[in-house]
Length: 87
Image: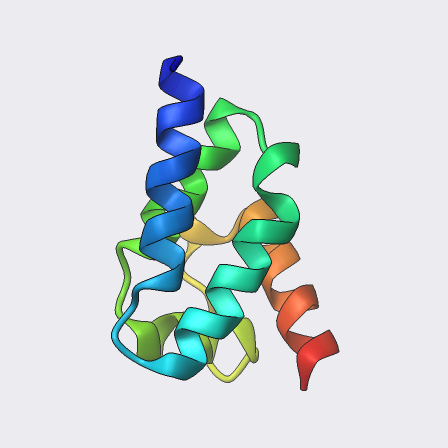
């Protein structure tokens, strides 16, 4: 297994084992849809997002609070779009 594939598997697991069923479903389905499309840099961005607290991710994804500049990137924008479609 190469490093990129290992990182993808790690992020898939991390996205669907969050602690709350709602975030498991939301983030798990988001990652399942986009993981193969992300390059290594975007996978690192995703990993940074997945390190955040579920409540923060949810508020950012629903545009309830301003997204910090350091995580306001293509991956977060895709997550926002994906979340709005699921509402």
